Image (cartoon, rainbow over all chains, first blue to last red; front, side, top):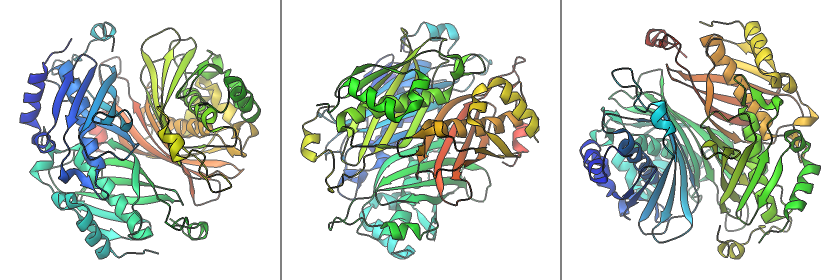
Length: 155
Length: 155
Length: 155
Length: 155
């Protein structure tokens, strides 16, 4: 079950991460274990050769996975990225890109997911990332995702 | 031996990567196997909690390693990042950060390096990244770094 | 199209990698862009707590992706692993594990794929890896996968 | 400060990880933030072309970092590898290899380190890995490395 709707997540992120506006990100889908976010093509993301820069793709995959975790845990949780591994596979076309994120694990202390990035309307993957987030303990000392909750969850 | 000076690298990058100006990056050191680049503290890099965002650190480590490779191969080479793996270790202080890059390998087809990021004037590492770049073949079909050049080089 | 059948791949690997026998690996599926390999549960792979060791899982994911590339390129190609990134997600049960590999890119110089590992008969992922291989040039100087071949291929 | 001597670590590991004997590993150095472990050259680690297999190097880097964490936290802590990222840089010579590990962070919940692997007596790096370990909470609910301990420690 999600603790926040897509609109709530977007509104929360817009307040907290002004950079998201810079990237023009749009949440296209947000479900229990998956999220899709679209990044428009903008000249300022480019690197030589006219392709989208790696750091712009890093920002896209990080935000996409972050909002998926946020929707699951609710806004009390400020999960922190601890590891990002990204493979740049193909030169993106000069068009929008779409990130498809999937949670691989949502444990009590760590969340791990993968994100595939495509040029809009195309089948071949532009980039693939795996990310790990540390989930802070709550103030009561209780983890935010109990083992019961976790076992009930088919990600 | 470097094929470009620090000034030449900076000038080349400024023309080609307008985003570098956005980040306010400054090359502090550029030697055969090492580079140091400083990123000032700016509000627009922040994420909730007042810390520097992961994607800003991704941009910093990518640029730092890129210019080290560029200085070695010269401006004809547009190396392409193929893999970036970054561990975020500690919350950066609200101050500038400094990236220290080191080449681990400069082969004919791949270059691999590591980058450590510190808050300016502090000892503990804020982030650590390893990056791989694909080096394109030259038009003549000759690799840009011959095996002789490579064996002569103590990185 | 595959250049080797499952049997040919297994026979080639058995000759070249005696360690594969040690692990008791069995190829369960081998298609154009996917492979599945099963590793039996053996006491010698264990680490404290009775779980399968990380290095055994590393060997499993490396072999699974390697044979997928081998089947595509044929036995002339000795692709070399250049990067392995693996996330250990859950403690594997004391039972066989199954690795499901998928090619993300088969370029002329680099191949990239991902491998998901499950305890046999279970849904939750035990480990997830991404791997990169360098594909050597052929003696004629011709890449083993031409751009035509590559574009024709829906992975 | 270390909670275990090199001999105690080796004895603990020999009991718990029979695979270590298989690899013939020898701890050459064990200090607060660094460890060096040597792996002899053995035919059974080889892969085609006569070079040491990737999984053997994975086992080496994992054990080297694990014993460094073990020495710091003491034998009560069974840290678990959560992420391993390794770059294979050069074909190892047919001789022993030496792994040099360095802790980058020892937090209350996560430890991160890097390991460089060299052929014995040579300067060029054969492989470079970064690893993350999850540190389990103690039964009392107290973290095994308090924030005081951590701040006192220059890694």
